[in-house]
Length: 291
Image (cartoon, rainbow, N blue to C red; front, side, top):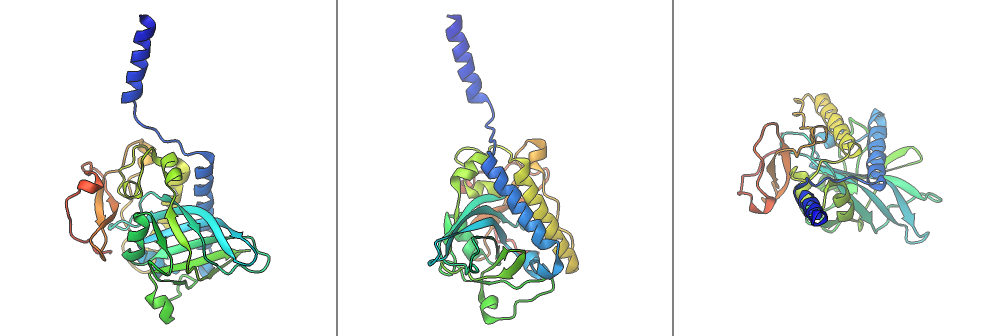
């Protein structure tokens, strides 16, 4: 009888215990590599993402070490992180993503390259939040300009909804990514944030467990780069996002609304805000313009 009572007690504790996600080595390595790529390309003004593009970005993707697949087709496969900018200028915690297909024009003999994408509109962002986006089909993509003072000059760049770059052998340059598919990596998200985690839950700060320090460090570095870009353009510094991982609590948030479609795609991190309702039951709100 005591043994049975002990079993019942153990099961009860398992039910009421908080869900804790522990990102595995693969997820932490991916976050650390994405952080390395972001820091490397931003520390040299002549070969960085232009301040205007970073300041006005709706989302950013960093895929470190995308591997070349095949010598003739020239396709690629890579794993990276996607973060969404909140209305107050801060950034969400990142979702894990996969990049596959298409050709990125690898140089002869080159087997891998770092890939960076900057979303300038909600169209492509809406698609990826729902699962995946095909670059060039669901959203126009163009090779991005380089250098903090660079501007988009070509017709293709002006019409593009996503800008793309690659970095290989120390060279950071714009590159075409038509046909590539960017999709959510659900398995990695669950490993980092808990079971049944969706990208909407991540962007709204509604995850069941705080992410690891490696994941949070990527978000923090992105906020630093974005704040520096805003300062260079003479704008006010964005608010500092709540550090959920440091406190072990879930960050409160306010639904972010797509200005293009009116659908919610993320959240603004706030301090001392009431806990949000689940995304699917959220009350309709008006679109919030970017600063």
